[in-house]
Length: 464
Image (tube, rainbow, N blue to C red; front, top):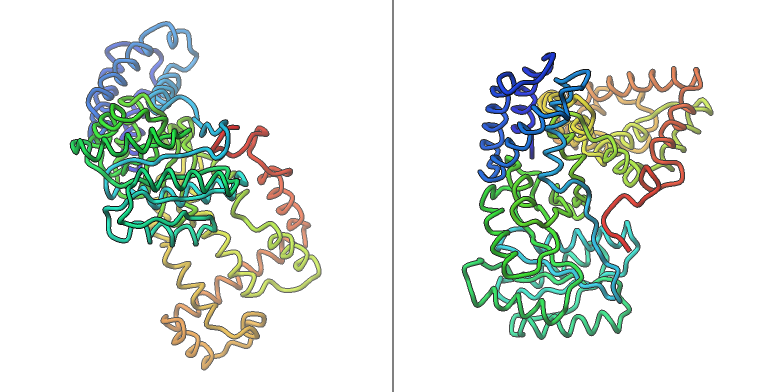
């Protein structure tokens, strides 16, 4: 989401890095570049002005003048201000109420409320072991109710039945009663999309709010709407007592302006970030981590938490034991490693979170296209179990069959077999030197040993 902004800010801040001291004159050019970078990212003008003024005020003040490295101190100031604009610290869901805690989602039509409802339900169910019920109060959009019911089935939570001929307020009241009777922890209400200038629709969502008295009222906004996102959020904030924001579709080709504008304008924190179409693509929003990523400093904590959830430690341990017994690294093992990498977002997804590797992530997208992983899995999937376990039996005729079955070329099959051979040799060397055990111990350390996020707290998402 922040690729262009990150690149522009990094370039702008390079010029200040070697300064022996900071003055109004030598930071002026850099701040102009910073201002342009923010405006081009579609950050709202009042936010840009406030941001630049605060950085200038702090940079030429006493905070930096005594620093050993003023250039680095200036970059830290920019990072701190980015954090401040986005909310200073992670703001978790406040569900410390008598169950069921109601979460009301509101926003424009097409913003991503229905998919966000399902993603949030899955996050609460899987990471926080909550019993969740979904309900759709959208009686206007064709198939909206059916869509939520389908998504509820996919994520494994209950969905209260409703129909287009019912009153939205009555639906929500009935759902709340059913959630109480069903001993649910959380009820998520998906409301209809509405324009903030439609007084009747805004009045309706107000009546729904009064009927269910939600613990959280979240404004779902499309990250690609730029400055309009902040203006719309302000209007919804006037009509509803918003408690937070879900920034949906943040993986799209957006410039990042919404994330830097919404918090400042509404005074409400961004609580979650939608980062893909899958139902597990919702992450708690951490301003300090996002600020670091924008400035190319990486986000190692998020990578560790993602690895903790998505890496299959049983498969890793099984592979280690297999290699230690002297058995070969076969194509089944190779496919498992490809799938593990894909679970962490592929090469570019991992590089994007490592310090100083933002541009490398772009190179990875070009040089190691993610489609390559799909093709490689397809090739391995076209082999027989015997061929996957004993790749040496794959001759010319078998290669032709495998290429035909996977929709690829014989050259692709040859390339995969060569890559497997190289990885097999590497694994053999690791095993001889005791490296497999070290690697697995390192993975265990990275995953936090006892589980949970670094620092002993939950990975994020809610507070009881």
